[in-house]
Image 1 (spheres, rainbow, N blue to C red):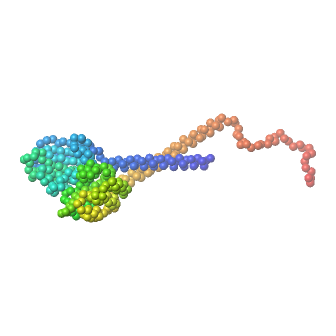
Image 2 (image 1 turned 60 degrees about the vertical axis):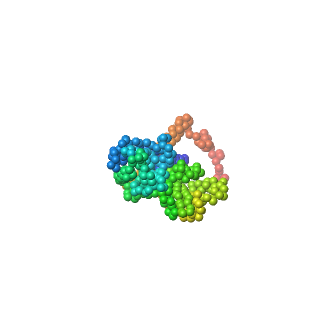
Image 3 (image 1 turned 90 degrees about the vertical axis):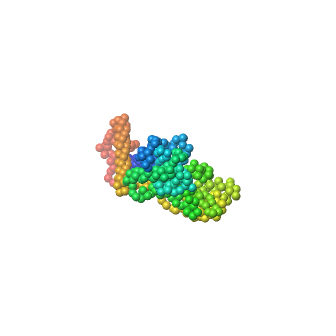
Length: 416
């Protein structure tokens, strides 16, 4: 009977520990998901107010600072585009005949993507921010810097001076640099440089015959359709940088066309997306099929289309190779300092011992309750039975009344 209780207590303890571990694991998963959850689309860009001072670039402000949320406001025509590029807020202010707009994104690559969406291939390159340009008409300057995309444009069509426009843009860029140094005081030089780097899929675009300033970085179906003229619904787009697209125009003296590179997180996603495209192409005529080429390379899907001659398209597609690398999907580098690692280790040890303690406490409590219950039940049963014990089915011979005669008549004689 005691062995049964030992087995029961062991099973109860094991189940308690298992339940505690599973519960803790679920809590851990929820924590991880919460850390990866993107910031909401409506976040008031308080820091950006510092950038738009009362006087900027020797020009006085002519209006108050205005804050809006273009990804949520239906008054913005490109509301869905802003949502795809992770724009959380917009800060704008007017300086005389110029308007400064600062779009704040979650990640630097999203700010770069928004800049690439709006830039004009015929514009001229500038040295503002990480990358920028001035429109060929001289009426607007665009650049991206860190997680911000900036537009400085003329409000009035006449009377503006291009030099003042660039002076104002340069002043904004300098103010952003100061703000970044303040915000990133704890970051290393490597982290700061990573914030200036382009997405890896952009770096895989061939440079040969690349048409200047046509490179675009796409993260959603709406921007994809606007840039390429293709139906974005025919392509798989996954959230949280699950699908990154590089687009560019290529041209020679007699040939030109477009090149697309889709990058997916996993090979399975690229296989599914490639199969969908192949199935879509089955309904095309031979003439339409001859105008485009698709290829799957690792996690990449490469498509070249609308080329006058397909030889250039074939060469471009063949030159693209997928590099198998390990990277952080959410583009945020984890802290690797000794103090942070020590803190994580201590938290893990505390969690493990907490789980063990909770399991032991639950086992002891459960065992005590079960033992008391069994004891009380047995005592109650004992009180209901008469004051003698059951012999368990044994037979007892009552020989108390039987006495052997002392006459010796029935005693065996000697030799018998």
